[in-house]
Length: 418
Ligand code: MEV
Image (cartoon, protein in one colour):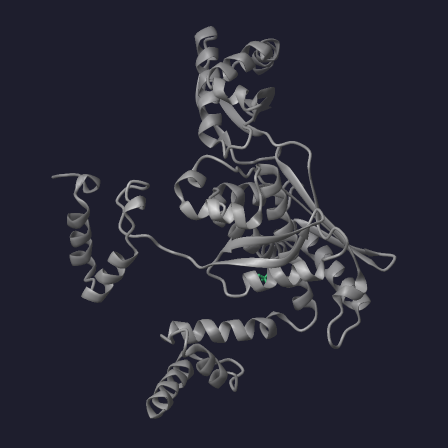
């Protein structure tokens, strides 16, 4: 029998349609979203699954006002990022720092009889191994990148990891790191009788840390009913609490990642890599903790967020997804470091917006109008019907799908009479 992936597109689709009882309308939807340019991007391509893209505004990062493209299905995310940006706008707004941007490849040795001896050998061959790495991808050197250093870690009972730190220039760099790491592993194998289990990039990007920080007068945080000093104090308490309770820390960090993932997606980067690295970093002290810290001193609310964020400006999906180029242009970024900074800044803004809402009015109040909209859309309201449907839904505290369907029916009947 022919392997599924070898079948022509139409045959594959028809087999799926039969097995899943897809209707004519459903098939038409799949066809409507089918894009020839995506067909060779993944295996067993069926259609292109789109997500909404919008832009966050009001963000000032390192003294520059930026518009940040974000791709997300969650209604409140972009509104919260823009709101957070507004809350944190000062002279420079959010400032970001990146001390280095290196990716790590690791070569894992197993059943090592004398780990210390292997460690000494690897350390004494550092320069030679770095040269082997560079030779595996000479164009990297012409772009200012290259293998920078080695580190050896001995792990019980008899593992050794050789960590290779590589400056990948502006690239996303996963393939590049894998190529260099495999070349170094081959060189070691040719010189030593060792058991190498694997050679692969590590997504725990501890050598690509970015810090976003801000300092804003507490007055800027005030709500209609609560003075800024009180709000800032409660934001600081919420941040302290996320340090001690993993149940809260996960949600605290999820809010930060609402913003970060949306930017990473818009910029064609690997959000799974970012997610796994960030959550590992949140656990670096032995328990899972909030990634950001907020504190008040002398009438100023300070915030800081440090995360591993090895984003690339070129390569990978940035090349094949045409919207990425436009998104880079919208954000006016032309290098990986600026992209990392802006992304971390969105995380910090997203976090302050969530915390401020949580410790004052509660999250639902701000979410309600967006939820009414998505409820109306989910029952089939068109963009022109949306305002009238959401207006009808405003009378309900927690509108249901049935109420949204009834509201849409009423709007349509009223429109017929016009
Ligand atoms: C919802 O998507 C995100 C929040 O839960 C984040 C938080 O609780 O900090 C509002």
